[in-house]
Picture (spheres, rainbow, N blue to C red):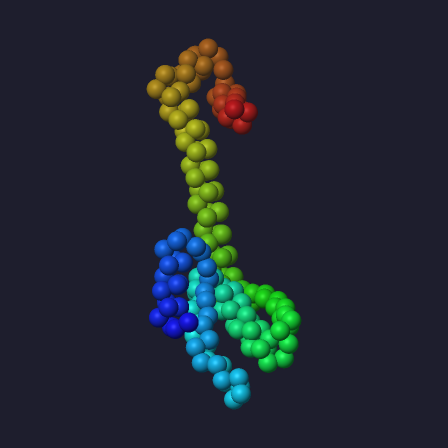
Length: 149
């Protein structure tokens, strides 16, 4: 297969909607001299594509040289996160929790203040004082109602 045919085949696969993470093509095989020339296309959006296709190419070459039944087994583990990446993650977590807490406090303070403003508009406190309720009893009852509801 020529390289242009290989290119056409890959284009046809991409148009068919087939998802693949790469391909490779041996375009120069010199078994007597031990030279293998490979053209590799690896999709860099997959973190494991380069390692997987590199292993598959090496497996193909070793099968050709040593034994056709040869199988390589690859274990691919990602590197640990760097200190800078951990710092970014921690900063994002801290920022989001600060935003959530501030929204929660805004909602609580909004409900407390709206009740006080509504009572001021209706003169409920003045009516209670005229009826004989002491000011500390009024505020304690107001506080307890806010805690319960």
